[in-house]
Amino acid sequence: MSESKLTDINIPNKKRERIFGILLFLNDVIFLGLAFYLSYVFKFKINNLEFLGPNVRYYVYYSVIGGIIMLVFFYFRRLYSFKNLYRGMGENQGVVLGVVASIFLVIIFNYYFNRDSYQLSRLWIVYIALLPAIFVMVSRFFAKKIIFRILSRMNIITNLLIIGINEEGKRIARTLSKNKIEKINVIGFIDDSEKSYKALTGAEEDGQNLLKTLDENNRVDLEEFKILGSMENVESIIRQNKINRIIISSKHMAYFDVLDLMDKVKDLNIEVQMSPSLFEFSVSRMKMFEAMGIPLIQIQKAGIRGIDIFYKWLIDYGIGIVIFALFLLILPFIALVIKLDSKGPVFYRQERYGKDFRKIRIFKFRTMRTGADKEKEIIASLYNREEGFKIKEDPRITRFGKFLRKTSLDEIPQIINVIKADLSIVGPRALAIQEGDMLEEWEKKRMQVNQGITGLWQVSGRSDISYEERMKLDLYYIQNWSIQLEIRIILLTFLKFFPDRSAY
Image (cartoon, rainbow, N blue to C red; front, side, top):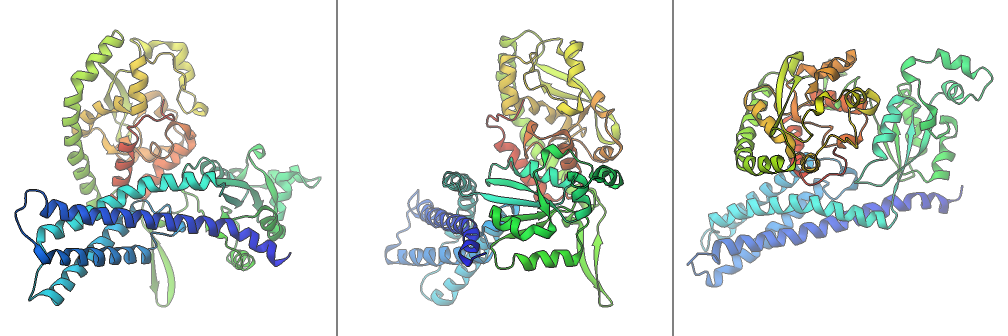
């Protein structure tokens, strides 16, 4: 293949990364400038009698110096790299660390160079510690949405190839193809084993016999796959389809197979990633160490234990008290509209399973007509695993009930259950008794912790993701619990209070 064609493969990724980095950098420059300007205004222009005179130059100098240092820190923290797009709370940590380090250097510079002339206002330093961090974090959230809309209109997409014809590969393809942040085109799948590839595709006369020998966990619905070939022709597949990213989901690729793949793509701008199953191990539970010269991986036990239980308790009651106060404020207005919209009580009470299958009674604002839970024909169709225990066009929902569900306001009374310690703010969704009784054995692990009002799957796609994906995300939350993850889910939940088409 000619050199020019190889270069053509690299153009989309490089163009995307360059545009992403430049626009995000400009966003930070603008909002850091605004933050430093407002810090000066708040301190010296609003209700302040101090006359600065020529000393104003120090605030100009150190605003410029502080802003430049922050941008340099952001750059070295790789906050302008497209590859760090999904860092989540890790990005905000980078912003905060950059701001704190910059303020520390500004204080040192001011003391060292100007200790005999002028010392900066301590209140101004507090402002430049708070406003830049807040402005950058908030502006980046909206800037990314705008940037990806621009990239989408420019038809800059990521062509994805998945290695591994199995259920894990299918889950990855289904999830990433619905990604609203990055425009991902799942080109298709290849397999690392010629034998399993031929068996799955029926390429040999004895394909069906070979299929019977495969692990039952790897049996898949081939209609969801576009199978491109095997590892033997991976190079031609990459070039013909202009692949930008490769995800390895196969359990059968050996160490040297991965090295061989990396060697084949080393001259191309292609990202290669591995996706271990959620049930094997999770990266956050792995700790690398060395024993007598032997590198080992310590896999921590899954779950919320020790001091983490106390931290989670603090979050539940700290945020719970604030939401409870909000609940008391909006209760009269929502109650009035519910009463005017349809006959029946304001609250809906339902028995559900809590931690360790303990039965609890949860509270919600009523969103359905009275007697909805006794309509047997609809109830019978509701408890269907394939449909995810949801009815998208449920005729029982009232007019105001649709609004409450779209905005998730119907969930707010569950804060009573949080105060009673029946639920947590974040956790797997509390299941109705009929639904909980249908859990498979591996799914019952999600009941080991306090169930929650919101959770990882609610902020990862709401009702539009499959039931199996919800269960896996619940288990992922338990296995990977951290304060950062907890806060991230809470923040994303508040953003979900805006009307959401995927909630019903």
